[in-house]
Image 1: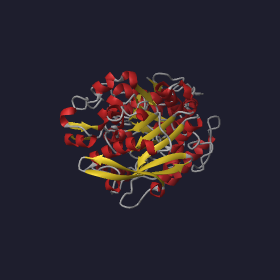
Image 2: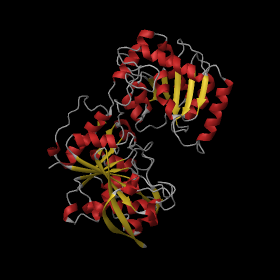
Image 3: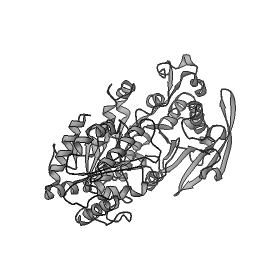
Image 4: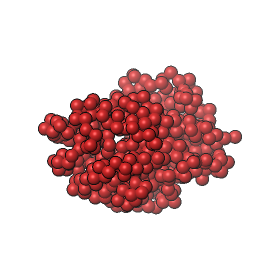
Length: 497
């Protein structure tokens, strides 16, 4: 009988690169595991998701401090993967999935409902894989509230977080919703500056912990990057794994991509220059093959290095290049981002011959990565990073600050010219960033060396298959070798204890 893994998440993006998406789970299913996902049914003020029409498995009553919530457990399928929906309009018929005043109560209810719903599912998990802070109290509940129940004793838990800053911190009084008195928080190791911290519960009580790159796993064990979790992270090193979230090499393939101007592959790069010319024409830039096109595709925040680009922009535009700045998210610019957006828009108007600024445009994204020569990612923090992987896949050379997943995925030219896939700098300073950009521009003028850099990047393997293999090996450690051996063809790059 195959082992069963249940993925628990406050929200599932079917097209995301997180470990709780349909493609990741399908690949685990292909390895012989029984898999399923359990999520809240977010009705978003009546605009219900697919789960609203799901088959009803059970109706349960979940006790909260001031009410008992009648909860419907529904079932649907995505690509052969069962999805179980916690249908409780009291908590999830809201304008937003997150950001409500009672989020702590909502997601403590959700954690309780997940554990209580297990007997009603058509699978009993050997492992519950909890995603980010909304599901972080599930390991605690299993360890201290349900362990005496025979059916629950053997269930193991894994906690995955994508950013150490996204902890789920709320008023301490919310512990009542978890069935805890304030006086008990210290006893259970959950006292946190007179507040309740969801992530703390996941880190302390999960049998294994994963985050999204080996370097990031090391960084967050330090006071500089740990955001008050560093000691707990350091104490949990034996249970902590850093695994890069790879991209889907079938979906993102310049040899077959129908969204770009011309196809190309690692041993035939002619189409790359055709994409560059098409992009320059599309954006109204002079069609020059002799100058590099530099792309900044990111949220406009200091965390993503927008401040470094802003301060370094006057000197950057003195170089012989063309610059494209594009906001990476569909949401309108928030409080921090709006000043950056205004600055870049005004700067582009003043430098029309070499600078283009555009708001978010999902349809243009692949054309940008296929047509650009370089990608700038001067992030202050980058747990994993998607854009640098996409850039290398499309033959666009990344220029990155050597942090987190950027350090794990980009081989700097300054350290290893023969195998390099990009350029890197260490200090969060616009002068240091500009030095790295100028290094890249200098090498761009050497066609043979530049094409070698492109090919090195296109050959790098950080695919979703590598991610699946790495998680597979951790699952084996938790629930036994009987689930089989991973058959990775790439050596699990980006995986580290």
